[in-house]
Image (cartoon, rainbow, N blue to C red; front, side):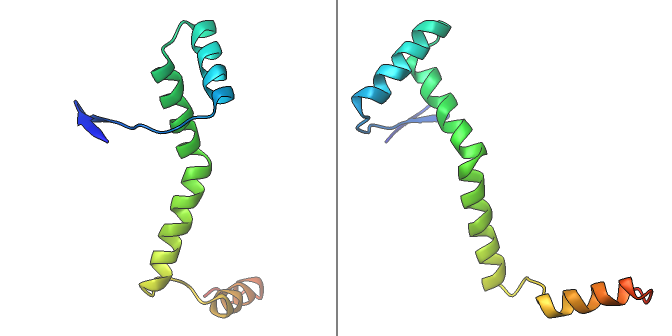
Amino acid sequence: MTKSHGSESVTLPVPSDVVASIEAIAEATDRSRNYIIVRALKTYLLNEGADVLAAVRGRDQIADGDYEDIDDLIADVDKIVAGQAA
């Protein structure tokens, strides 16, 4: 990876069909291949990537002891339902 001006260059093999799609989209939208690739990566990070990062954060919270026991939570809900707010 090469770092410059707040960004980094990444070199990786990309299947030919994916490159062809990127080039077609870039041409159709009058954008650069780089723009299309960065947008695709950002979309991934906002969707599936965000789920992965949330799972990692949750795992870290559990490891740090920062969680609620489900039995305690159910008992609190039962009290609320019975009119005895926790």
